[in-house]
Length: 361
Ligand SMILES: *Cc1c(COP(=O)(O)O)cnc(C)c1O
Image (tube, rainbow, N blue to C red):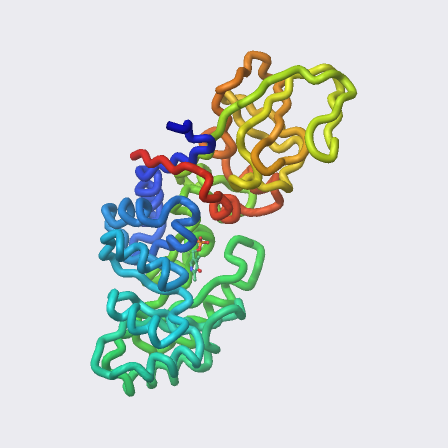
């Protein structure tokens, strides 16, 4: 039996805990948990099972294929398709699986209107309050509401909008979006949904009928300069590999592709069996930390496909076989993301199928 090289350990009890933090922040709101992109790289099915056990109200996925995976695994919780359906066949399949279809554009409205009028169809409308990615103009809310009369088989679940700058407390955009959305909705029946993780942590006025957290359920903070722990969240994922070589390299010698690191003295260099083919970003520079025996040691030289090299001067006792944490307890994913010039979202989603998953809790 091969020994797992790189392991992502996912603590499902942390995910349930993080849902309880969402509930504490938005006690009046229903929770639609975003588990698109394979549960942000955590494994959509186990994450969905954990959240369903904890009583989540609905799930959000990007597309029909993701929803089919959940239904095939026996998940019977409500599921919304955030990008709606792409064809008539998808619409029929979605209806058969009891999925909720977000309608964000006129062409989808026409597509759904062409379905047989007898079968029930659960729909959400998406309105564009300023992000200008998906959604109908706010001015069309009234006519969309009226269009429902022509489709008695459509069951309206609610109205969604999405915030562009909720992670920036100084931006006036969030309040402007909320105000414009509320004004457009005035007098129109149906549940409202505004907030992603950043909206729901930082903007109390965005905690309306439904909240749609993703990132924070996995224990990471959506706010720059904060970690999940600052918000009472528990990181759900730890990614680890092991040292496969430890050797002294002489002063003046270089390490790795491109010879970008020169040893300033004779020093112990460790080789860790993880690389960009596992999801460790190649852009991580010399100095970015990994954790060995609870000590931060810096990556040196280039990240290669299957390996990274680390400076073991701080850890002379390190030996082949020792576990190495890429992110997780003791090394927040947010910090690693900053070193990589990206966000926790991208690190989570960037893990590849060479990584072994293990579930606890
Ligand atoms: C992904 C997504 C969310 C969740 O966003 P987080 O920042 O991960 O909380 C909410 N709403 C929509 C429309 C999304 O696409």
